[in-house]
Image (cartoon, rainbow, N blue to C red; front, side, top):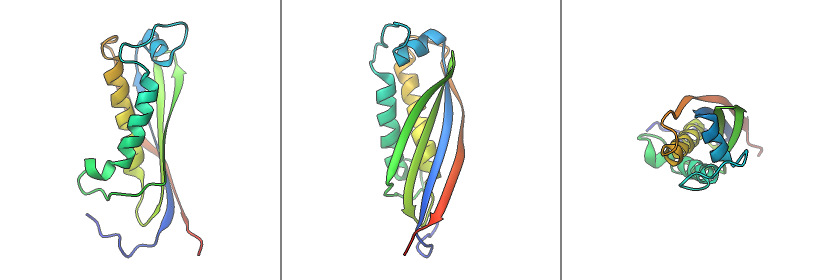
Length: 143
């Protein structure tokens, strides 16, 4: 691991995104839209949101050489951007000497994997794409 012990604590936020691609009918079922019947495994978005937040909190255990961080916020949001694509956004915040990019990326990736697992029985065309960091900020902490 990189030694960050001499770096000052800074308020940091990171936002990542990824896209879940499925048949429009699958997304209807996943999102409970258009009177579609539910997925066999249940409420996919709720489960994926919790999975993403839990993953962000455990990133230091999942990825070798990542610092285990006491993050102060983690969130996962879902937005249907077209009939067959769902945008997943993950955010994480901390006040620490190191950033939270990996936590935001992990939140998105695990949320995508969870959606895949919950919908794979009804749609063999599932895929996810373009997981990336879209923003990171840092600001000094007041004395």
